[in-house]
Length: 330
Ligand SMILES: *Cc1c(COP(=O)(O)O)cnc(C)c1O
Image 1 (tube, helix red, strand yellow):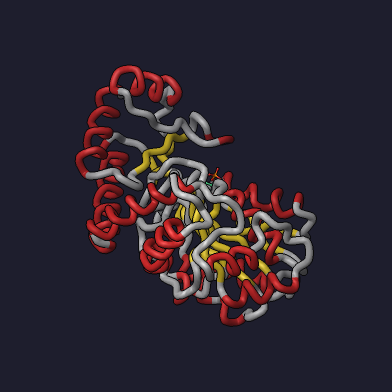
Image 2 (cartoon, helix red, strand yellow):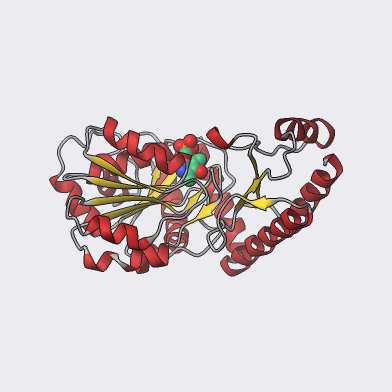
């Protein structure tokens, strides 16, 4: 182990930082948070929301953000669509035109439903609302598809360790725009552990506000080496190909998609159980016979769906193997 206030740590942070900026598509500092993604999701609310936050809700994770914002004592309102549907930028536009909100929360790839919202469409309306800050969760899409934080005009972009990056859980990354820093300066009661201004001050010296999980940062360094060795375009293409394999299987096996067409995540597929199989038994047998784990549906759609991931380290070989084993159990 190395000390977190010494030169070794500063060199580690300094070394990985340009690669992180490339992955975020930003010239802003990228921060290392020793928390799971929810730490940064809550932090974003505490650092940015003054007048009110519009929570774009289309699944378990994005729905929960409304509750989190309220528990932080903020005025929060839902923009709720049915699970399986995407967030329509025209609805966001209409809500923001009310002038009630200074912040928006949005999840890019809603991991519970397999919906991928269009950042291009939603972010295209933001220039009309210069006083609104947008927070985007890219936990299950980061590094799997191209996301340009600066070009899109995202104010806080965050991701966790254990989904698209395939690292052990308990760590997350985020970046903050100049506009969001300026906002944070005026917001009282930001606390300490997740204060964006503390992160900025410490990052300027290649440090973190409190003792970070250095083991995670070593793992991240190794993962970044893998990512840049493969190449970003090749990594994006691999996700496209493995996702297509899953989609082909869904159709071939006679299932439907839970997410509506045109808005299906490139990293994970929520399969609709239109055939009425016993999904829990299906998952149990898969685990017992093939030592493979799939999720039998999240929250209220447990059993009505199951989820197949092609994110992180999955290859055409591993995904094909999974699909062959699913056929065997079916
Ligand atoms: C898993 C997930 C989270 C929450 O991550 P934690 O590690 O539990 O904090 C948030 N958003 C999305 C989209 C997720 O998939």
